[in-house]
Length: 77
Image (cartoon, rainbow, N blue to C red):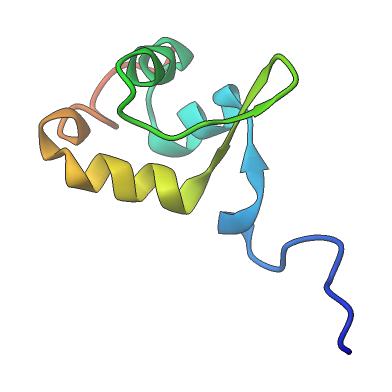
């Protein structure tokens, strides 16, 4: 039987924290928190920490285009 790799091979499968996801999407951490509060993006809870997989987050944002229009157009504070 073939052994599974310990780490994902693609960056999209990697877990990102809120700051990394916000930087990737070109929005603030507060925007990510708002999307999470409204249950617009999927999250993986690791203890008390929020972690995100890029592919499911992008898919969720594409399903709801009204919110994704503003992504990347705000200031990045």
